[in-house]
Amino acid sequence: MRILLCPLSDGGYLYPVLAAGRELERRGHRVGVLARASAAGVVAEAGLPMAVAEDFGGRRAFSARWWGETGAAQYRAILRAARESGADLLVTSVLCNGALLAAETLDVPVVVVGLSVHLWDYRTGGDGEPHLGRTRKSRTLDCLRIHAATREECGLAGRAPRWADSPLPGDALLLRGDPALEYPGAELPERVRHVGPLAWEPAPDRAELQEIRDRLESNGKPVVYVHLGRFFGGDSLWPRLNEAFTGGRFQAVVEQGRSTDPRPAPGADILHVRKPWMGPLVDLAGLVLANGTSAPVLAALRRGRPLVLSPNGSEQPLLTGACVRAGVAVRLPRTPSGPAAPVLDTAWRDDGLHGRTRALGGRLAALDGAARAADIVERVARTSATPKEDHEYAISRPR
Image (cartoon, rainbow, N blue to C red; front, side):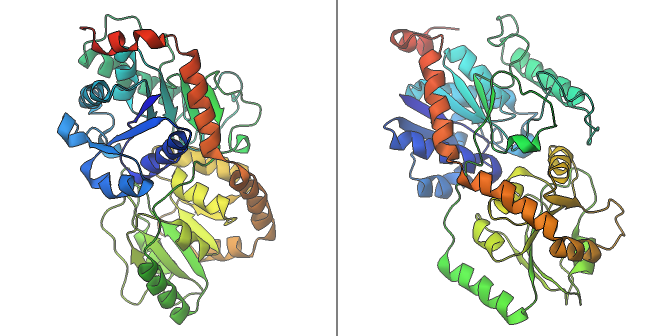
């Protein structure tokens, strides 16, 4: 089977899809990747061949920052790349409307790699869930609206939808978390499945990692790993980081991530980094402070590190609420001027928090998410409505 991986090229979306792709290639499938030029080094380290999205007209179309505005460009880029490679199946990431629509046009199945929790409406249950940032219904309707607008922009509005009124999961939506992070009593939609973290990232440079170790050891204070996501117009964590890590008990390694404008204060016990890997840095820490995006949350849980979370937008409030409810995280109070150091100290000393984190993290670490994802991809391919013998016609006939 020929498989085209076409996720967003940001690490939090790209790395899990590469994990699945590597397993699919190991099973004998022909796997290629469509990604931005900036991801070439990472994809090469994953050992997979790559087509450059910019060469297919997808300059911004595979960036999480532009996901709601570039669906049509993404659609055209994937269409061209899939036809050129003869793809039998697409694997993409959540929010990739262009990939969903390209799969419809090509009459090939598409598997969507999601976040650690389900973003949209449950099949049943969840009625008592608190509104975290926005309601599930509001998020679902907004994403369906963007999908419909992209469909019209791509000239597909007159075509019968492949998945009726539920297009967002594609043929299968794979969640990277644990059922304990979903709202109690809620039932996931039919095509949504938990597979586990899908953990893969580039290997660290040994010299860089040793330099970081040496810096932390020379300081001597306990380490908190901080991973900053996008602010989404919310408050920057930098003032609170500077307060918490100046003259206090802890030191921090702060990964800039997708945030902007780093502002470590002179004299703060802060080592600011920007690396394509985080696992070895989490291993050096006893606690993880993050905005509540999936990648650092899953990295912390898999290593048994409790979380302190300060969410802004997107999935951050939803995942933060899930982690707090599961007892593996505490939430940093929203007051921008409120001190963070006491919260960190309390979380560090909370034996119950550590125990629950080790239990949930142990379940996640024991899962072979790549194998589970590959099983679902192969099952989707077998049950696809597009007969194999008709595939060449399906990808070449005029539209």
